[in-house]
Image 1: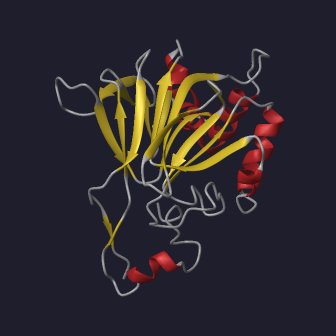
Image 2 (image 1 turned 90 degrees about the vertical axis):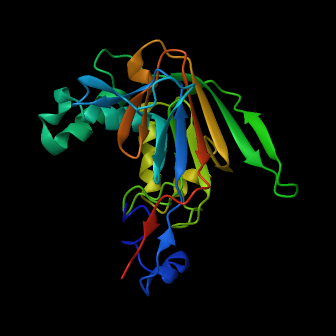
Length: 249
């Protein structure tokens, strides 16, 4: 999280208030899921309830960094399974290779689902619901922070603790092109300038999953994996409540 909010990337105006040791609220998001969605635990072998509420219309988690579906979430999920963890740090490369260059010789998976964005009108403040035209995806990621790693600038327009949620998305691409885009993220966030990339500030995101196999319905919330039920959904929105403070002495 230190890299994500900018503590390892030099001074930033939004962090100056932390220097005297005063608490600062950390922006968070709420992720709501259809009611039968479950946490993936025990290196992918078991499932656990997201929360303890017995009968509700949805399940809720909270995050401060990232919510993703598609290539990013699949990589995090696959690399944490018992199949890959035995290979140590090499598991990330191995899992990524299988996702981008499947061993059965097929193309990378085309993730199926409907994405609807809620975007605030800068003049009126009203929220406009905008369904995305394409229902096939490769990489879908919403974040409140600029970086996922020190050098991985996934959202160059974001500021540490700025509280804005941005969505980054691109559709099905050849493996080499997807790799090129991710490499550009390590080059000052240049990937967001590419015509194939959607990069936009959002207030809410809803994904209705159209996948039969659970493997393609897994999402990542700050490193935790959720398996969304078949025909299920996920909704993200910025949380107005202050649930987490950061103090830097």
